[in-house]
Every structure is written in structure tokens, then in C-alpha cells.
Length: 58
Image (cartoon, rainbow, N blue to C red; front, side, top):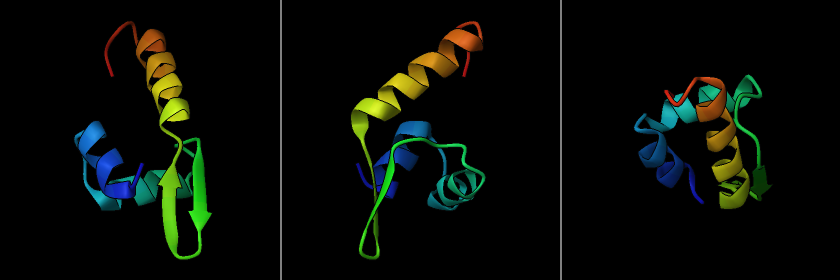
């Protein structure tokens, strides 16, 4: 999953994704050269855990 795809999924900007990543707030990031990718399975688990801990509200 690209930064753009993750930003759409999270309903945020690419800049916000990069900022959150720099604070170690997003798991599953892999750098391939100059490209950043996210493992969709890890992102799905992370969102599910965040939703559960927030009482169903992200």
C-alpha cells in the first residue's frame, strides 16, 4: 500500500501520514529505495486494534 493509498484510507493527507510515521505511530512501513510502502495486513490489524481500544471510534 502506498502513502497515497494509506492517506485515502485514513481520510488524511500524505503529510499527516509522514508525520505520524516519524513519531512511530504507523506500523508495517517498509522503505524500498526512495519509496515507502505499508503492509495492508498490518494496517488492517492496527486499525482494528485502534477501533477496539477507542470503543469503536477512530
